[in-house]
Image (cartoon, rainbow, N blue to C red):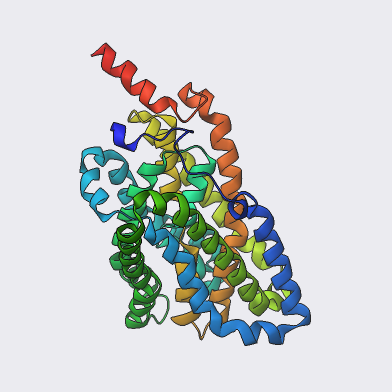
Length: 353
């Protein structure tokens, strides 16, 4: 990696209170939503029209962090981008489809929801996981830029390619959902970022605006989860086996993928911070987009929506577990105990040339 992409503990952004207590908020949101769905289902139905706004606000803050110029500049560090692009767009959708065939072929709606979770990589929460694991933050922004741009075009194609022979897929409706929940946040995020930097300066944007936007993003996630679990809570409580059915393939997918990419990155010479960042960007799933597509393009099949809502219920604790394990394995695999060791490794390697 070049010096421009080196992140140290000193210059990485600090997590706000909402981000630090994310697991607690997620658990409380799900419990509260389930209770609302059980005892006051009319509240969830009344708040349902707010879900599209919540999904937009969940994705928009991540887009404000994009520097489209960094995509061009990342050509020098092409290896992380090449790994991420290969796994996310040539491997992961088919891997999750295959895992779904093994475990969920007798549950077509759950299988469809699993595929929706697999076709698009995460572009928001992945930055939180990277930060918690002491990854390379600037590199993560570059990889997120790649994923944000590519999945606008690939998501409708993969849904049509993978699900088209098994279900009635309206490709136009899916494309509209992608544009609404991905294209529009991208456009508004880039424009508002440029406007804020022009008016206030980049230092103000980084130190003042970004922390607020991060908290807004997570608050939107929490409130949207409350509404979605309120809408689907009765079904989940009546059929708790749905959690188990979705958990088994997702656990297998996340662990297999993350540690495979981590080892591949190590093999090609990445330090821990860059390896972890690359692995998280290959592993995290865009459940916000999956939920949006399920609620719009598959509205006639409510169980598809239920399966995608269960996605974050499983993904959040899984990713937190992977963060913990990644930091534990850092010394054993990379012989470093701080993510700031990347630059020192580079200097040592250069001195041997």
